[in-house]
Length: 234
Image 1 (spheres, rainbow, N blue to C red):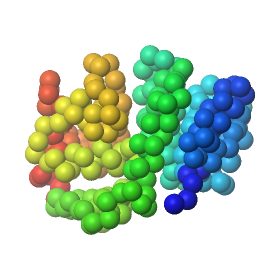
Image 2 (cartoon, one colour; image 1 turned 60 degrees about the vertical axis):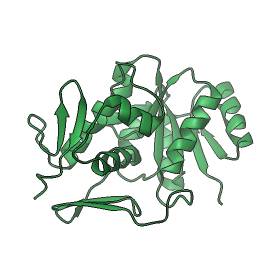
Image 3 (cartoon, rainbow, N blue to C red; image 1 turned 120 degrees about the vertical axis):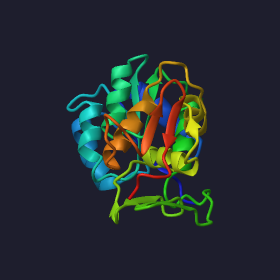
């Protein structure tokens, strides 16, 4: 099995060195970049498996980097945000980050999150090899190829967006609470404040042509959660 390559974008050199050393001891190849303006070029040219991207950076902040590389970078972006700053977390997800984690972060927590995100990447040998697909009218989603199509057009989804859409589709007709979704996708419970699921649902609705004011394909069931409709895909 090849070693996963991580680009750590962090301007605190001591923190970056300690983090890189810890990840290296856990069998990852880690490169460090301290500036946002040079990080973007490295991400696109080197195409690492995962980018750990701090928000506060010289040259360009993490949000600018994420926005700039997301259309051409198909790997995983894990953003490091200020603790309890909902705006940072939601903005990162809106710009295409796959997940976020609040600073300061314990190394073992960062390691667990990285491993969980990499397990979901296309082509990961740990993933099931059997073909898994769901079809609803003109909508088709395949776990084996990690692709989704609507009316013959491929949907441009981040890793986290695909995981959420697949989870919803495989439970079509069933209401899934935020706690259900967070437990399955991130291994944490809903604390009443986390808006990451809401942000991803909003992005998915735009990509599947759902009316944000009156969604029919991914419905909000007030006080309960979200429901993927088995209909309304023609």
